[in-house]
Length: 127
Picture 1 (cartoon, rainbow, N blue to C red):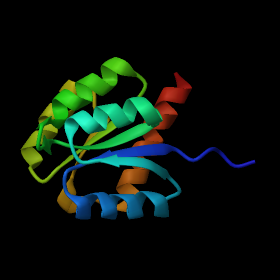
Picture 2 (picture 1 turned 90 degrees about the vertical axis):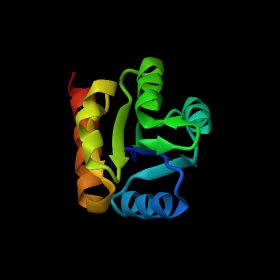
Picture 3 (picture 1 turned 90 degrees about the horizontal axis):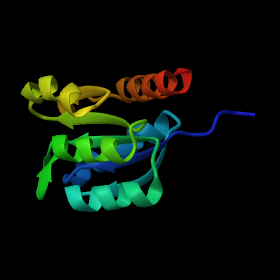
Picture 4 (picture 1 turned 45 degrees about the vertical axis):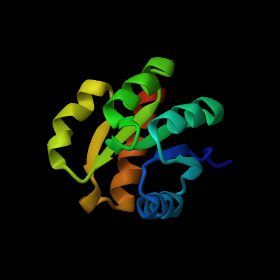
């Protein structure tokens, strides 16, 4: 029996990025259960679908990803949140909000996403 597929939520206001991230993740065996384009809708969707992990942009039209990350982690401390941004200066703030990692959008690959998300899941299940 194979392991269950990890359920992923993508929160990003750029539809082309969401589409590319979905394709990369699904190619690596993840199940993208939902997408959101705003902070508020992302939080609502996360509550409704209970993902295993979230791929989260920093800049959203109605808030910032760091605040969303804190809210997601407050609701579910075991949730793996991966911060993505075009601004590499955001990397230093990713761990402050509880994210498992930061990945620059310009260097996003299916292998990187899969490795980070699987590693975060393994860390949580080993604890």
